[in-house]
Length: 146
Image (cartoon, rainbow, N blue to C red; front, side, top):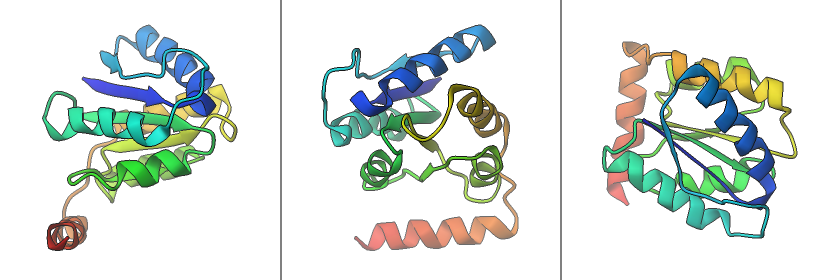
């Protein structure tokens, strides 16, 4: 199960990605926003990431105007490794090397077609492990110091 969410700046792109996920038969839950009205991205990031940390969802897709603000908010939640990407290669490598569990994008930065490619790369790529695991372990150690 995927969790998906956006603020008003990412709402239109989120809606495009929801259609893409539906067409591919990917199950998801939407934590908002549900229209283009102004909302605060930290609230959406928290609602989405709590579903990942609890185990209810495996990965998340979050959207705001640039993807940056919502990724910063998401990364404040213990257990979340969110990455703001604007190209498919980074979306793939953030899964393969960083075991990211949240992909963030900017609705004012990324087009629908590119976003679909990024989502596909992110969802279809597995974590490579190996030499990358020790780096993830170090990230977790830093997180646990806080």
